Amino acid sequence: MPIANYTTTISVDKTIGEIQSMLGRHGASGVLVEYGEDREPAAVRFSFTTPTGEVLFKLPARAENILAVFRREGVPKKYQCIEQAQRTAWRLIKDWIRAQLSLVQAELVELAEVFLPYMTDPSGRTMFEAVKQRNFALPGPRQDTHQE
Image 1 (cartoon, rainbow, N blue to C red):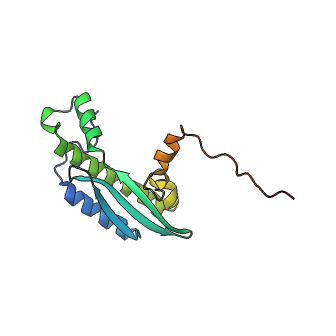
Image 2: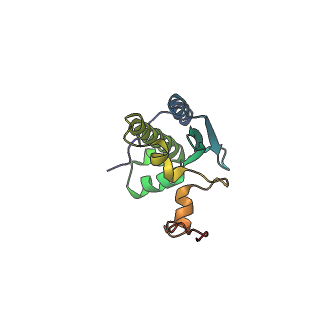
Image 3: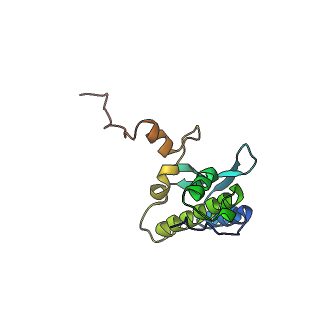
């Protein structure tokens, strides 16, 4: 079964605008598009203010991965180009964000809970990248250094 949205004709710019608007309507305090070396949109960064402070997130588009899947899965040749992969990647991101924000709006989850893998540290590394680098080992129990 082909990837969802693989035939989309909606431009990357329009989709990014929809993402920015959607995040803004749900309380994002900032939205930024990150560009790759090819000067094409590569990721969306956004922040939300939580009870404990500002939390930053980064969702990468990785259109080259989608293009590889198109080729591997035999998507019709007319769609096997980087421009179509970019359009598809951004539509998928928009759909995913919309679904996650719907869960938050319905109070089934907290915002930081659904976006946790994409939360970034001060260096810009996502939580997923940090955990993957540790071979998916989570931190152990907190060791209390103060003993009575």
